[in-house]
Length: 310
Image (cartoon, rainbow, N blue to C red; front, side, top):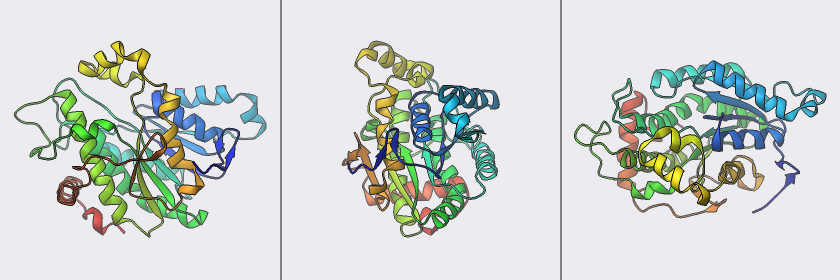
């Protein structure tokens, strides 16, 4: 890796970063590392109490060093439920208020897995709603703010979508994103990650040259509360396999590099594992599947197809 680093990581002074799902696990590790490198981090959580509590904890951990540096805005709470398009718009409104001068990095880290089938307000199974529709909707809502950040910084702004190696088990022939006939928690999660990865490639191509890059990070198998809270097979994996799983800090390394390494300013449309480019599944790179995902997503969001977002 090309490293131009401070002791806490690549220098992020003056950069404004949004991390969704930032109160625990990989998101928490990502947020604290980027703030330590000098960024102002917008800490997203579903509830005001949780976001504010996390910000207070982060600031306490920084202690007197933050106070002496006058860095009271190092962490800023951002609140909203990513389970529906309406909730995403509420989050986007909070981000605009928190970062009126522009956004430099957006890390779509929040994810979910549900043991029983349920539909979002928009009629999509909840796993796909949180892991894909919310990511696509929030990115679309904030593209203008990302472009503003790029214009003021004189370098591209970055979108980092946290993916998973389980995308390779996704079903590219899934006909209905609501699973009306048969539902499997594990399969729905794999499908959601495949769909979002394919869309990320579409989006990267669509916004090429506009001052925004899009890349995906595979954190590996990580010991977090995600699996335990999700229940089902994910709880079993987290419980029995915990000694073999990576720490959140290790899992966050790829997201951190994609957010901060200046050597990656021009990189876009790639999938990274262990901090380096990696070939994702053939399905995720299939042009026909990408086009289908792009059209379905645009229909869900009620806007222009991704290829028209530039």
